[in-house]
Length: 376
Ligand SMILES: [Fe+2]
Image 1 (cartoon, rainbow, N blue to C red):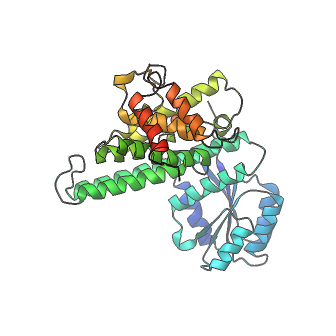
Image 2: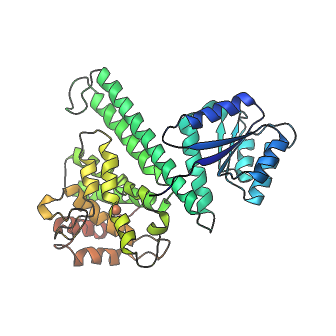
Image 3: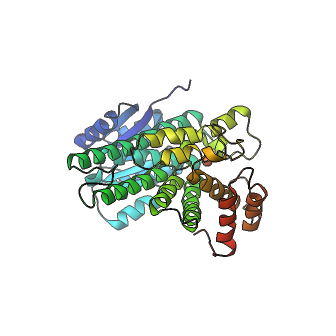
């Protein structure tokens, strides 16, 4: 059992009302424990920086005495903690200057909401940790917790929109009733999927880019197979989030260059199940969670998590399986360089009929060799 430590946030703002507002936002998250330290004057900030253990600093720009910009410079130089600037100043030059001096984000006070703040903290802590050579374990687990929280927020938001559509009499499941309702739902769903896929970016930009490119290839294969439009949409959406379950796999394991231990491999193998669980929470008429669950199944039954065989696997998963391997092999990873596309295609060819669906494998080859498909 991993012990979750609270995230310690230093709020530097001379306005007690603003400090209270920020503190309340952080405290309103039941699932996540934040501990706040408040500092309103130069000496209080100095005291907190020297004596408190801080994970994240929220810094106002306009304070008496030493200015926000000067503090930013000092905190950045001493590498104390990541800084998010929260300010009422709406001047592009000031924003540019703060980022230039090391702030990880800039939030205008008019845009300060709980969700904006929590996701900014998640991103900021992540980027900061990635920029460090030392991995800090307790820190790492805090990040997972925050990312899960951001994900939960997205799913809650999605459900609220569904409830609103229902109130308006729109039956999105059966594609009936008020004209345009279905399209509206589809558009909303697509936005939600894009946002969810982006959640991985600060943690693991490789996976984020990978999912985007798998969507391009899987969508192209599905169209070439002349699958119905709705099914192509489903496969593209599933591609964009097929590795979302990796949110639960430690970064060190994802990027490990050597052999994984059995325990580490089990963690990796769990990602389709976790992805499925996350996506099940998004009600939709499309089998996206099922496709994600099956994207590591192989037609001879050697895949995971269930060891399904040819006829049991969704065609969307068969397409993503091929696109996944081709994209992964033809991209650089932190631990190896990319292979040329022909090498990736040969790998698919060699294993078609055992691991990969023959028709999908052949169409994938044709996309590159005859249809001039290229990843963007
Ligand atoms: Fe995967």
